[in-house]
Image (cartoon, rainbow, N blue to C red; front, side, top):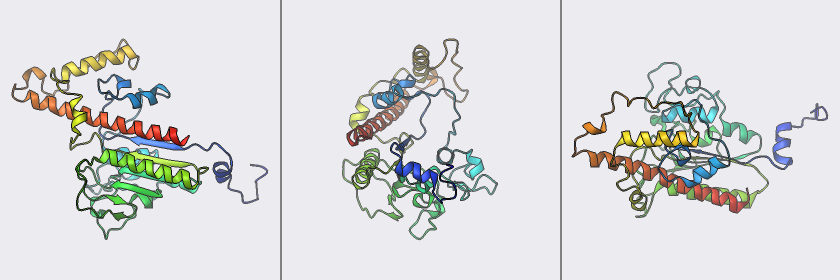
Length: 318
């Protein structure tokens, strides 16, 4: 720094662009996921690729969570409490109070991709955005809170809260809507997000392999609607027929065995608004079991796609 003083050299850019080893960054965000829904946190759901990541890194057991779509994304994107950047609620609601501005990240709050792009990174986003008000999700809208205006070089996905996994509405690429009248019969959006992410990384590496990248892969899985692929669903047939109380007890025991939680921890009572499984009518139990099977299949599919992305990073040597 002393040698560079007064020379006009940007030290951060010098580090990123001229010193080997500037880290490539991949952030994967899953939506409406529970604490115990990965195998590495005690789940019966098959998540070998996520478990492999955990095995080579860290599993956090004490952290702040923002259990709602828009605020969680704003917190992840800025590193700030979501209320402090105007995202205390969802994009379709603006009650008029400070901290609740229809899900738009405050323009004076820099995002991670904005900061990284200013220091020489290429920045890519794929999947769910959900930080643009519903009133700005049309072809003639002000795009100031769309992904490209908040730090990303490229974006592919959708702007809203949820969409059909087999036939998404209003897909966005860059700053415009993708003109699609129909989807292939085997289309599934989590697969599509991963295909696009892999394509972006291949193009980036072939064009400028020395330039660092930031990839934000934000799946809508396992957010509702619970749409799945038949092969994924088949793996969980009858897996939840004993109900949610049995499920939480088994997960709790596995977490203690794995050391995720302490041996002295005690499982709290079921929340008062949750019907005991014994009180669920016989006719409704298959439906409740099916909901849990669908959810598990969505998490399983997300893990498969994370595995595809990890394999591609290995293939690219990054």
